[in-house]
Amino acid sequence: MKKNKNLTLKVYHQIIELMLNYELVPGQRLVFVDLARRLKVSRTPVNNALSILAQEGYLDFVPNQGYSVHRLNRKEAEELYQIREVLEVGFIGQAIRMMTDKKLKKVRKCKEAYENLTSSHVTRKMFILDTEFHMAIMEMTGNDLLVQRYMELCRKIFLRHRIEDLVMSRIEEIRREHESLFEAVCLRDVELAKARVREHYQNSRKNLFPLIFPAT
Image (cartoon, rainbow, N blue to C red; front, side):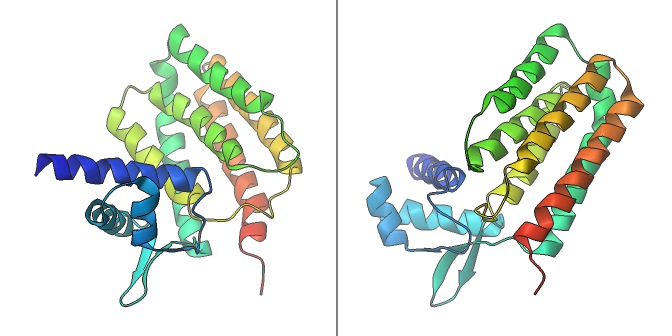
């Protein structure tokens, strides 16, 4: 029983990884027989993993049709961004109070990783590095459960929408916003940091949503 549970968990993370790498994209229909062959496991752990992912909102399930990767709608995106912003604004004061040189060094490292990423087009790696920067700030709180929930929110945002139409000009803006937020954290200025977080999310929604959800 434990072996089956561990295998299901392994397959679950493998499927998440395929989504992170954009090998499974929003709207794509999944055939568990093909996934089982691809992951070199039996159908049972794949079917179990798909069921869990559907319960968590990453996949859609339609009887007699099967599973497909959930495509984010505007209402969901608005709600997820709102919750993410509330968490970051609400806990950034605690993050700053509990900041150490070691923790700040990790935030700087994540910021620089995003800055140093070079590409001629938007990639999912950019979303991952952006998330890691914000995660490093949240980790300074020392609240492991908070960090876990924050990560789940981030995944539900960037695993469930396509990125082909996003533009590179926004990437440079994000670099500047990260730098401004980092400066506020270094200064231990809680109110300034909160303002920078709110500005970052406001700009993200303003630039991202019209591309993901074009007017019809």
